[in-house]
Length: 188
Image 1: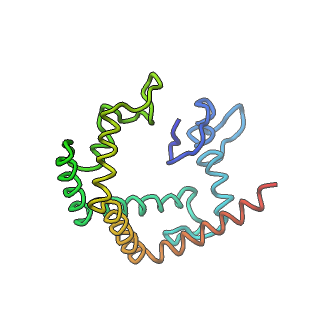
Image 2: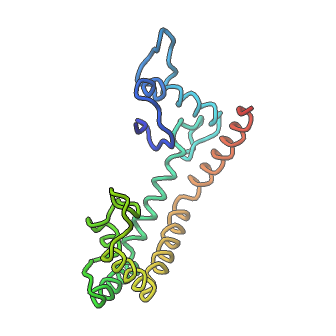
Image 3: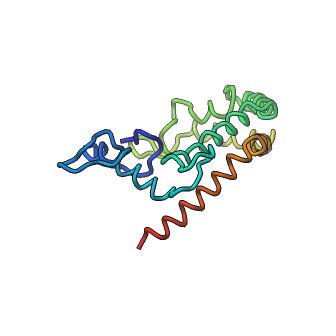
């Protein structure tokens, strides 16, 4: 079950999730901390450090604001003119190889093999069509330097986000250092 407040790298049984995220006030006669046990743990880790917004104490999950900045950079990179041009050149290369896709993600998400994880539901390896598209895809990516264009655009987008958010990122860095130091103290 996904956490109410964001990304969770572990699963919590449904009947315990309400205590974890604090959607109940009591559990088996005991008070549940504000924002649940997770909120309590986050406050312990954050201590009295300022959050990326400069407010003290940092809100329990405010460090996740970094994910927003990361997404902003990824979206800006994907929409960068160099990436669009490389995608168009890739599409032309694929067409010359006998495959029609508007961009690399559309080949990856082709319904004939998307989500297989390398094997179909019967455990079979990729078929001839998937292999042919994959080989052409890689050859075209190399020919038009699609990955290079993405890398350059992503680096440029990250640099712009960093420059525009320097104070926020500096405070976030400080918060993460406090969280680490407090985690070391808490762990046996």
